[in-house]
Each structure stands twice: as structure tokens, then as C-alpha cells.
Amino acid sequence: MSSPAATYDLGKLHGGLRLPSNKMESTATPLQTIPVPDQLILPIAQHVGEPAHPIVGIGEKVLKGQLLAESYGSISAPIHAPSSGTVVAIEPWPVSRRQGDKAPCIIIECDGEDRALPAAEETVPFNTIEPDSLLRKILQGGIVGLGGAVFPTGQKLMQAATMPLEYLILNGVECEPYISCDDILMREQAAEVLGGAQILMHALGLNKCYVVIESDKPEAISAIGESMATLDDDRITLKQVPTIYPSGGEDQLVQLVTNREVPTGGLPTDVGCVVQNVGTCAAIWRWIVEGEPLISRVTTVTGPGLTTPMNITARIGTTVADVIAFAGGYTEHAKQLIIGGPLCGKSVTTDRVPLVKATNCILVLDETAGTAEERPCIRCGECALVCPIQLLPQQLFWYACSDNEARLRSYGLTDCIECGCCDLVCPSHIPLTASFRNAKARIQELADEKARAERARRRFESRNERLEIEKLARESELAQQKEDARNAGPAAIEEILKRQREKQDQDRES
Ligand code: SF4
Ligand code: SF4
Image 1 (cartoon, rainbow, N blue to C red):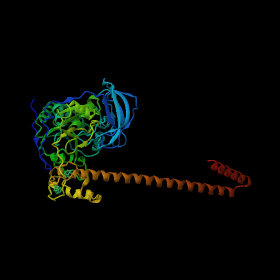
Image 2: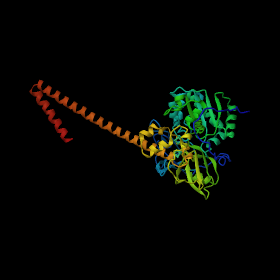
Image 3: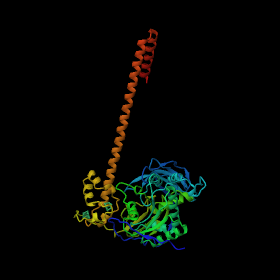
Image 4: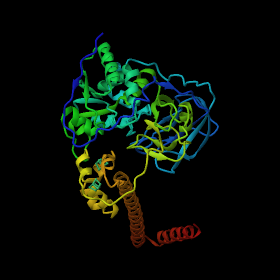
């Protein structure tokens, strides 16, 4: 069967860079599956929002797919057991969120049997489920945005369902160098990706879906095209886009394929679009059709400091050390370990950190990744030319150095997507993106502190209000008793006085 022709897109994107892809090495071999390790380390905060709350105890035996920690608060996601075994600890463990961070993790000693929890209910065709029920079901699967954003998918879709929508956009644009997990996933699991798209269209009542892939991924384009031909669903269209970093950002992608501009501080839903990563779609399909929550993911393990670059499917909670060992280990020139890509990833100093839902890439660089000396800004303006958000990075850097929050806000710091384009072109090697990341964290900390102080102030005022009400009630009761005494005879007065004396005695004792 021939694959449908893809349209070549379209749209305008400001700035961005054409970068060497460095993806050939990791896509030279098919997707590999790592065996279940002896131990799984599961952070309870693997998503944007509140950490999940553990509901298992130490020593408890668990089965694959069993709920370990339930979502908590309005934005959160549950965590499920990636294999069967025993919970041996719930304790802080190094994670890759921030350098040197430890975070609470549920640690499972695997029993090697990989026994799954029996299905709680019979699987029914997704299109027989009411859209609202489908959205609620997606919430329970622990699914988060696997493109790196890790926003809980159920909550994102619930929010989207309240808006007038037109397009579902499947993000197969994997523009950061070295990362190829979505490319391999589309090549090998195209039917699952498109199945997930159909589930989403049913849940959101949509009938237009774009699958967007960069033109330098012919194998993925062909696999998705063939799967579309088999599916014969004319609501789904394949779109190719040029390979320009960072066209895979949600707002950039919307602009690229629909020519609609997401307003500053807004969401794609403001312009009628919902964007989902292709890996997230496949995860939705596995949960709704096969009943398997998000307990594994495809990750790229690559870089010049690694013996055998490849893409792997690994259980969430497998340590990076186990993944590196599976990929043949470090070369003797390995120098730097990064979780994520070279531009948006985070450098870590230990491979004891676990692979989590957000881990799209494990990158090992060698000594050729030199560090250039930082020099003063020469006001060349290159950084502004490449910024996809049309910010002025040199100005932002100036205000970040002086901690000028008001100026940082007015110059659009919160819109910065931390893509790193400005760093790449800066002839003075100024760490612009790191300074923006730190400034955002500082502003967030101040906002959190302000919110905490506001909550404390409200608690204090409520307490004072309550005490005042109690005081007024007591005064009113006393006044009533005096009034009763004036109107009563001697025996009644004696009775009232007696009651008052008893009450005073009780108050003294308490
Ligand atoms: S690219 Fe670097 S040197 Fe040039 S204006 Fe921007 S910060 Fe300054
Ligand atoms: S990191 Fe921020 S300021 Fe720099 S180019 Fe990207 S979006 Fe613009």
C-alpha cells in the first residue's frame, strides 16, 4: 500500500538555528529493550506540579502496574510500579532535576518475575467510552508529556476540553541535536502513535489532526505514512517541516503549521490547538488499549563518550548506570554526563540518578566538549537575531545580573523557553541561558515565599476574627444573664449566681 503524500510546510518562525544533528550513531540500530534491573528508583515528583503521595509501605510486595503513589492536588500525576518486587525504602536519592539534588524516591527490589497486576476491568473499544470518562481514565495512567515538559497529560487535556478547539497537533519534531527517541518510536511504533491520536480526537471531539515531522527523518515519515494508509482515517494529515532548532517547542510548532501565534503568556489552546508529543500518544494508546500505565519509555543513550550509542526502551526507575552499562559503558575519553540534550539538558555528576518519565536522552560527552572563557558583551546583537521568541538576551542578561525583577518581567523573561540558541552564537561565550534559568528560579522562590507569607497573614487574621467573635458572644451572654437577673425573683437570682459560680470554678480548673 502506498503512503499518503506529506505536505511540506509552511508558516514562519523567527530566529532559530540549523545545527549538526549528531543522530546517525543512535539510529543505526533498531530499538533495544533493557532487561528489568535488580532495583528500581522512583522519584515521587516526576512531573510538573505537586509530588505524588506514596500509598505503599516498606516491606510491601507490589506487582507491575500497581499504584505506588497517588496524584495529589490539582496538578499532579500518579506513579506505578514498573515491575514486581518489594518496596525496600522510601528515602531521598540523587535525581537529575538540579545539580546535587536528592528527592524522595520509592525503591523497589525487583523479584525478576515481572508479574503484572490483573486488569481491574475488561478493556472496551475506546470509541465506546464517553469522552469525559476517557479523560478521567487518562488522568489515572500516570501519563505526562514525554517530550520533556512532563506536564500531567490528563490535566492538560481536561483544561483543553473547556476551550473551543480545532486541531490536534502531534509533535514529532525532535530538533535538539543527539536526541532521536521520537524518531525511532515513529519508525517502530507508528500504529501506536496514530492509535493514541485517534483516542485523543475522540476524547476532545476533534476531527483534524496534523502529525508533524522534520523533513530529515525519511524513515519516520515513511513509517507514519504507511500506518496512515492502513488506518485510512482522513482526519489525520502528515506535515513535514524544515529542520530548524527549536521548531519543536509547542508555540513554535503551532505557528509553523497553522500560522497562528500563541499569545504571550498563553497556551496553544488559546488559538484552538492541542499539542501532544508522539511518545505521549503511544503511552496513551498503551494505557487505554492495553491497560499498561506509564512504566517505561524510549530514551536515546548516545554521545562521543559512550561505546555503543542506541535507543532503548527502559523501565522508569532504571539507573543511568544500568543504561550506560547496557550501551557498552563509557569510553576512556568520557568527560561529562548530561540528562537530556546538549542544549536543554542538565549536567549531573553521578550516574546513580534514575531514568524518569522526563528522560528523553542520556548524553555522554568527551573532552572535545571544551569550555571557552567568558568575556564581556560586545553588543553584537547576534543573540537577539537567533532568539525564537524575539527577546533581547543581552538586556535580559544585564537585568539578571542585577536581579532587577521588574525589568526582567517587562523584557519577557518568563517567555524564554531556555532553548540555548543565544548561548550558541554568543562570541563572548556568556552563559546567557543559565543566567535566565537561575533568574527564573529566584523569581519563583520569591513568589513562593510571598505566597507562604500571604497564607500566614490570612491564618493570623482568621484567628483574630474568631477570637473577636467569641469575645462578643461571651459579652452578649453575660448581658443577657444580667437582664434575666433584673427581671427574676430572689430564688431565681440565687440560682443564676450559683450557675455563674460553678462556671467560674470550671473555668479556673480548666
Ligand atoms: S551575542 Fe553575546 S556579545 Fe553579542 S550582544 Fe549577545 S550577549 Fe552580547
Ligand atoms: S534561551 Fe531564551 S533568550 Fe536565549 S534564544 Fe532561547 S528563548 Fe531566546
